[in-house]
Length: 261
Image 1: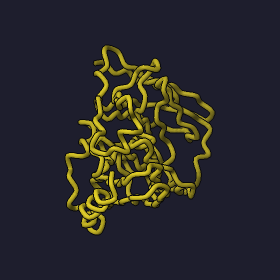
Image 2 (image 1 turned 60 degrees about the horizontal axis):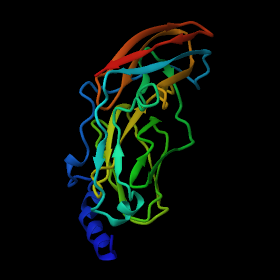
Image 3 (image 1 turned 90 degrees about the vertical axis):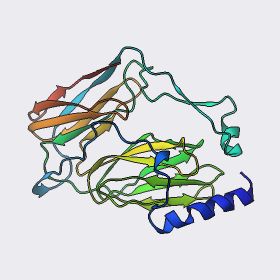
């Protein structure tokens, strides 16, 4: 992207930056999954960290044929295109590792007490003209650090329902910004108005009981106190699934989920 083009794009997004992204193109970010819901607030009670001794773990499986990878054209920005000379693909329903990757699994209800937000920030990086990670999890009030690792203009533009919208431009490599969310919300779609193929999702919880599945579809939620919990599995393209799980002190409970094409 030439200097003149970069300045032109900056001018175009300048107004959204001042007005919380009010003029951004909504079509740059697809809507969340059909059954996406806001996270239930925790009941009032004594505060504290996740000091329970129970855990819930499992595997998210996918049966059938996954959709073909999405082919992404990056020619609109020569710098992005140079990073991917063989082309860029995105496998949204990724079961190549033996399980379903990038599924958010979290306690939707049953949490009592309050849990202070960690002070350590969670990093959302813009690298290779993609967001990393694809699914970001933070607690209410926890810092979200946004970094541009590319030598080209990026911006991050979440589209929340209950939280405050913002639109942060980062025209230079190495730039960082920090934001927080003050309400639980699952999920918040995120897009880049400069590169419409860039998308990600932020999950904001008011407790620490959540996980994102690994390459093999496995997850583990630790530190749970005794109780009955509703566990929800959320995927950006597939319908939400829930299970009720009861744990006692020291329990290692299992909760597997299966999606079908």
